[in-house]
Image (cartoon, rainbow, N blue to C red; front, side, top):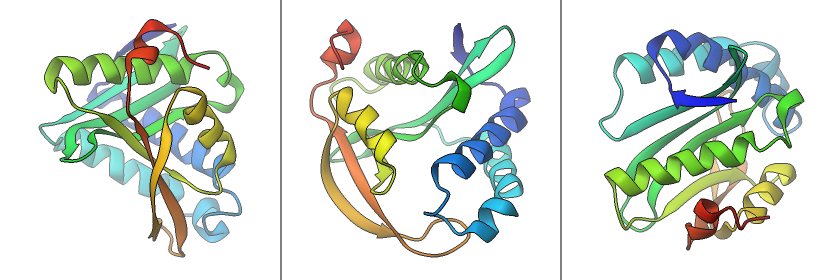
Length: 177
């Protein structure tokens, strides 16, 4: 498996994987009309914008195996004064989960963040109802610090939890899970 920085040419593949991941993980959480309809165009628009007008603190990594996109992660360095670098997206193709891809992508973000934003923490938001994702992050040492109501694309309201790594060293040493 190869992990590299994403390029504009990756935007559509990332958008399609992102939509597929939402359809699987968020069924029953997001509105079905959105997941069955507008989710692909919504994700294409999001990723086109992220690649054509990226924020200065943005990084996107992709994981590939035999030229197939297996997963991706997007982060924004020093996005929050309290928590540090924000992992905005981490998605792994359904048939490639439990193979270390998500852990590898998070590790790449930690390394990038340490180089460009030394001394800062790492955090992400995860939906309260997304139990598999919460278990994954907890196994990697993240802890829930906050919750808020959030209106996802397509409408509705969900509980979003802020997961924080108070110590990223175990991620770098492989002593997680």
